[in-house]
Length: 218
Image (tube, rainbow, N blue to C red; front, top):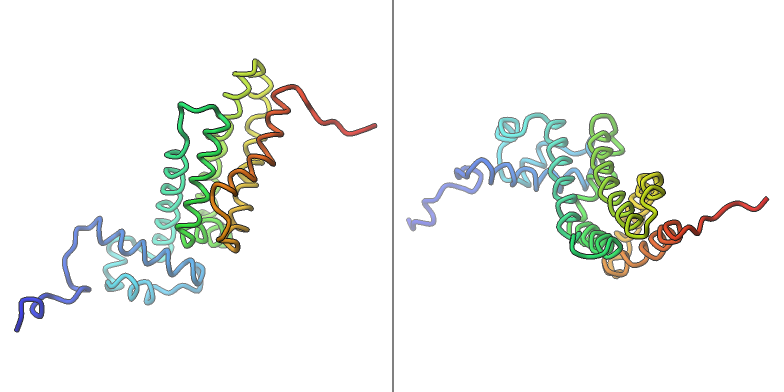
């Protein structure tokens, strides 16, 4: 019998805990994105991960715990990707454009992650939706800081401070909606998507910063 034949099967091999947990989370994200939280089975996650169900329970807990761990990991990965794209030495508008490009690149490369974050977690609700609300709040803070920075450069920092968070919330919501649309249009590049949103939203920010405010006619 060869040395290769004597090796234990993949399911039985010992791996570092961090590696095994990543393996389980990768499989869980795949299964949850495909079936949703309620229809996903621990049996399928076990098969995809190549580990036993008792090992999943030992490492990451119940199905609810596992889903929560998936949300937290994918939310962290998404925010880290956006923050890595925001280059602090550039003007605020270019920082935002690069951040948006990173966001859309992440959604394109990790479709399953985005599906779990934006569709499945919100559908299940409860504590899971609260995790997404927290992620969105952090994204809004990041964008609001760029709006205030741009306003300060133009000498209207107080006005930007007043409206920055609300404007940032509208941009984040628009970015999420466009990301969902982009999943069905994979031929559109991240740079084009980011430019569309910048043209729709940032030009309006700039008008506001310059004092050009739309008002309804009497």
